[in-house]
Amino acid sequence: METVTLNNGVQMPVLGFGVYQIEPKDTQAAVEAALAAGYRHIDTAAGYGNEEQVGAAIKASGIARDDLFVTTKLWIQHAPTGNVQEDSKRSFHNSLNRLGLDYLDLYLIHQPIGDVYSEWRALQEVNTQGLARAIGVSNFHMDRLVDLIDHNQIVPAVNQIETHPFYQRAADQAFMAEHGVQIESWGPFAEGRNNLFTDPLLSGIAAEHGVSVAQVVLRWLIQRGVVVIPKSGRPERMAENFDVFGFQLSEAQMEQIATLDTGASLFFDHRDPAMVSRLGSHRSN
Image (cartoon, rainbow, N blue to C red):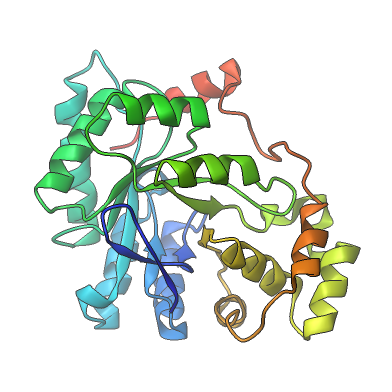
């Protein structure tokens, strides 16, 4: 498996398996199938409600802990119900216990909402203690990211953001690279929006290589240096998504895919007041 080196030297697999929107009752079987297919990088979150099932799958697999890269995420902590820094550390340990692990490879602030500075101080503590090998953020626009960088000791290792052919984030990726932050894609297939799987351009490139559109999209992201975590509940699709290292897109094909960029989210805007309030009203620890 190819890896990227994070800003603290930790090696992160470029391809992982995400469990967003997989029901808890289906999660253990899905993760077991992904691990059997060869995945060693698993991405979950407290907000997904399936950490315990991810942990059960890891335990059942018998795979050595050092061979796995496990990510989970801190949901928004809510002052004045408590001390946000302490609540964040408590939430971290809750996640660790649900996963049945002694440490995490990557721990992310899930949303750029609330007292993220107290949350980040908590993440710095668990990182310094060796309980999280790397720490980072998710869904941070560049202004919020640089503000966090400028006012804290540890630079986030990763920013996991919506990235797919219709929202390519090239400028954001360049900015993050300048600051030593690794870009990671969520929603690499745009959940099929804009008819991604039947797009004529992507379909034509897929036909040239004898692969699927999904494989083309994953290969395109990996060649850009983007870490990616596709999701599927079907073992045959998991295997297909994992099989993206045997072909290479040409420079011309990369440039063709670049023309699909709309420059806008297909899901939601973290700067939309209504969305911020909606996310902030959700509770998870």
